[in-house]
Image (cartoon, rainbow, N blue to C red; front, side, top):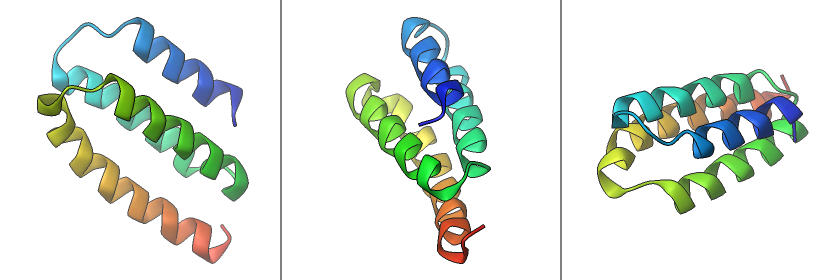
Length: 84
């Protein structure tokens, strides 16, 4: 996994204050960095992201992020499937 992604996830969990939208925007930035990663690195980074999301989110914050996550994951999957 990219050290940058790991560091971003650590920073987000350590600084969990702010609105749900602020937190979601931070995770969106991580997703964007994952989306341009090489396929194998993206897979490992996505696993770490999903694991962290399942441990640290409250339901209300999830609704916004789930929409962003599902859309972004579909784009990443297309990139991984095409080998980009």
